[in-house]
Image (cartoon, rainbow, N blue to C red):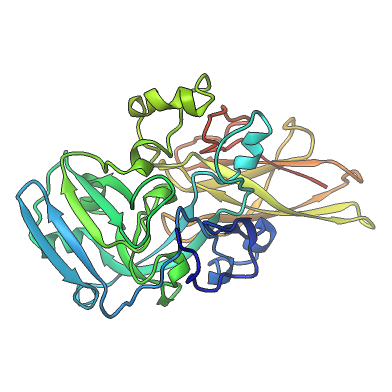
Length: 361
């Protein structure tokens, strides 16, 4: 793979891999912003980053059910009704290094900065499908693909979602061309990418150029042989090989919270703690609690930011009469009453880690 013509990458990120380029910001920087600035948005790649011409970019729509093929240009897409959504975009491997402390995992070593909360603008996927005459069917799938560059595990990058998610009345699934009110940079999938609020970032295909209506999920390796939660007894590549097909692709991530910063005021015995929380698919965050005594007692944090159905939640709290050294824990509760688990079961790929947030001071 040729990595020689990539655009400049943000210098504010911690590089976790150079070829392909994978990098994340410290979570302490993330929680200073309601909407994540572009230079603090993580980079997750399985191949080279390509710079594509927005003026000539188009998307092929292949309807396998009705044997129809269509091409729609980016200018034509932009002529359709514009839609906007604020949504948190999170990698399945966020906090992977924490799971790796339980037992070694495979994959890029991520800390807790592989998440970004951005404003996305584009056209609803539902409107695109209606525009080109694709009828709704409950049991079909919409498959996305980018052939911009080869990937580590396949010739292209692909993913899919059930058609019912795209066609739901409240659906905010977009073919997006703007990020934070600017054209999406190449690093983040411009000129056109998929945005699937509430769904793991692996399905948000960057540089999307093909959309297929199919009776089956995407056959791509990243849908079929990766980004799945395998049982704990599967602990090697060899053991995973024959069982990938038995388990569903990871779509939504579990309820989560992270302690991003702990500032200690020694003179007054005070801690100022800040962090973020991300929802599952059962409602946004309603409460974040913190503890300094290993979960025996909890103090509610103040929610300082939340926007709409799909955003992350930023929170902070002041704690008094604390010791010189210790550990702060966090746990989130959502609108359905679900409470973040104290521990998270290990899996070989190190995905969907959501044990209580934890940071020493």
